[in-house]
Length: 405
Image 1: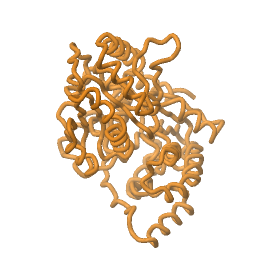
Image 2 (image 1 turned 45 degrees about the vertical axis):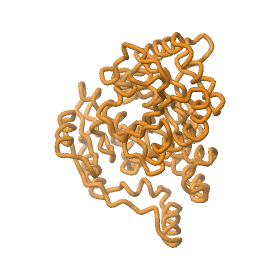
Image 3 (image 1 turned 90 degrees about the vertical axis):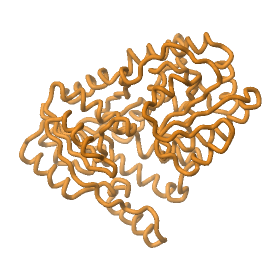
Image 4 (image 1 turned 30 degrees about the horizontal axis):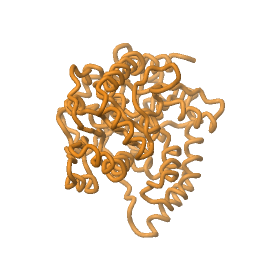
């Protein structure tokens, strides 16, 4: 097949973030048997070496400049203008901010000249480039990394919205937006059954397939020894709202309880671009804020327990899968373990679940005290990743969706 992949996010190197990881690894699988044209945008910080590196994985790399960002700040007049445009166009400012007319014209011409059999939008923010009539010429697919409506609704519910009143107004608009854009596509791919249920309710006739994330098992090898001790770790980009909330919740609500009984416990916050709120945490006893590190897996191998205390954010978390692959026991919330069967009836336990400070304390205390439990969770989680969550399996499913009528 001749596949046109659209990703306004530059997907290389895949260590940049969750969106890049999914896009790159699916692309890497598909390029083995198909001709890939990737249309993307050069973001700040992308180097010439990275452009060359990505070019080696595709038949044709088409690169556009990133449009000037639409400011989300400003006075009341600016906010009214953005809301009015959202009402009139039905498209959120976050999507419009990445829209390039030059890129649109190139895609339109490519489709009109019948140069592709399939178009894939890698993340829903790219849906804007697919016009409704494209379905008559070519198969169109949107790979929804996470539902924007579901994320906004969850942030309102958990009280972590950056702007409560804005999000309250935007919620019905996002619901309308998600319902409308899904109707343009021949196929929809999501990462979890939860997202499928929600999008299916919007469009009962839509063809929706669940394809979870995966792990590069070579990049996240299983550790050979359990270091023991009382070393906790969290991994993830530390300018991401959901990660910031998770870490602040854990530090403020959970860690003090643990320090009462295990005073030498340390907590490593490992991830790029820590915001001032996160940087301030390193002033507290036992907390280490690393920023970007050369090797995430080295920190995972040195930790006793990886915590994933997410309270918002939809989809399977790469951070959870990577920790499980590396062999470190995981304690996570319902959101942090979404899409993973870790503790069902008849299932060998693969992680411990916790949502309240007391539940986190109990789970972490159990693992500190019982090396065999740590070993069991570690072993069973790695087995699950090897059989169910590899990029090879995800890529094969993605290829099948493209091939099916």
